[in-house]
Structures are given as C-alpha cells and as structure tokens.
Length: 312
Image (cartoon, rainbow, N blue to C red; front, side, top):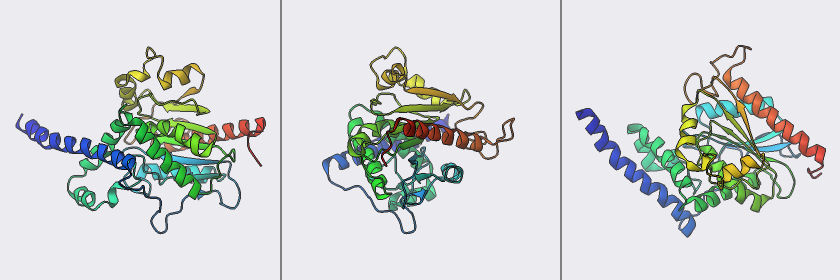
C-alpha cells in the first residue's frame, strides 16, 4: 500500500504537469508565439528512398508511436522504415515528422527533457501520451490537426513534393500516430491537393476526424493487440452507434478495409514490427507487415495510373 501511495504521489503531479505542457504547445502554435521548426539536423535528409531527380510512385510519411522523441527513427520504427525503403525503392520515405509536437520540436533535443531522460525516462512517454489526448480533445483538435498537418506538408515540400502533381501521399501510422494521421487529412488536402492513402498499424485514435478527403484507409490490426482494442472501447466515435463520427461516415462510404495480422501484438517480441517473431511461412512479423504495406501502396498506385489520375 505504501509503495502504491508513493507511486501515486509521484505520478499525479507528473501527469498534471504533462497535461498542462501538452496544451501549452498547441496554444503557443495557434497564438503565433513560436514558429514551428522546419530545418533538420546536419546529415539528416528530408527523404530517403527514390532519387529526387524523378517523381516517385508515392511519398510515404511514417508517423511513429509514442516512443518518437527525436528526428531520427525509433528502434522499431527505424527497422520498419529501412525495410520499406529496401523493399520498395520506388517510394520517397519521410520519417522525421514529430507527431507529438505541434511545433515540430523533438522532445529529446530539449535541455530539460535531456536531463529528465537520464533520470525519469517514463516522463518522456507520458508527454507523448498526453499529446495524443490533446489531439483527440474537441477543444484543441482543430488546432492540433492544423499544426501537424502544416508540419507534414512543409516536410513534403522540402522533400520535393509538388502540389497538384497527383502523386499519392501515404500516411503510415503506428499506434498513437494514427490520431495525428487522421487529423492531418484536411490540411494536407488544402495545401497539397494530393491523393491521400492512410495505413494504420495498431492505430490508437478517437475516430472523430473527418476522412472525406482520404481516398482509403487500410486498418492493419490483430486480435492480440489489446492496446488498439482499448481505443475502440474508450472513444464513442469508434462505436457503430455513433453514426455521425468521421470514422463511421468513412466506414459507410466503403473507405475502410481491415487487414488481420494475427497473432501480432502491439508491443514486445511478437509485435507487428518484430524481426524475431516467426510466421508459419518463415517470414518474420516485420517482413509480413512490410510486405503488406508495400502491396497496398502498389495496388493503390496501379489503380491511380489505370484511371489516369497521375499527372505526367
């Protein structure tokens, strides 16, 4: 009991501080107190994969889970990005977007957080968890969506994307990154007028964002992913009874396709992007996830070319 009280006394103030700090960043953006960061650290390219001298088949923006705290990829996210680049050299891949910072400010590069990271690493994850709930909060959601949508659009332009080019933009999101991906749809449509394909991997999101301007949403999930199931239970907009929500409107429009990646888990040695966990066909979970994502993007590109929507 004493240990429980000790943890409660320690985490309570931390959660309160995180809740206040998470709101401060989106309000600072909307008020114009601080400008979002656009430059990347030396040696970090704006995109990897297909060469910039010819149009790629698609631009893929990877929005990582709550472990994302610097420009460079997390360990697991980095493995997925590398596998996608190796398996689909026709893609230009961006992994530097900061989904949990409306100001595009990497958490690990902030002096206070660098100090905390060496002492209380849990707070880094609490910060990003709180940002997900700020992004889902109806009071802050429009501001957050615009902020991160602008960040993604800026990074795409710096990576060579031309508005109205017709080249698809794929938002591949893992876990809480799905809340950001679904929220960025309207701003990307406004700024780039690009065909948008969303692929969620164990997505944790509230289902309130409007998906009218998304061409399709592919939901990669697993019966063993309890974290994603928590999201479907806790957010009423994901319930079928809540018909007006953006998610349910997209479902009725036939825009959502579910793909089962059983028996993958959300985290750990059997996660969607584990290179160790093996399937009966000999592939790892990472291999299967990579193959699935690439197949979905290529099918979408082929359909775009067939309908003549891609500009020369």
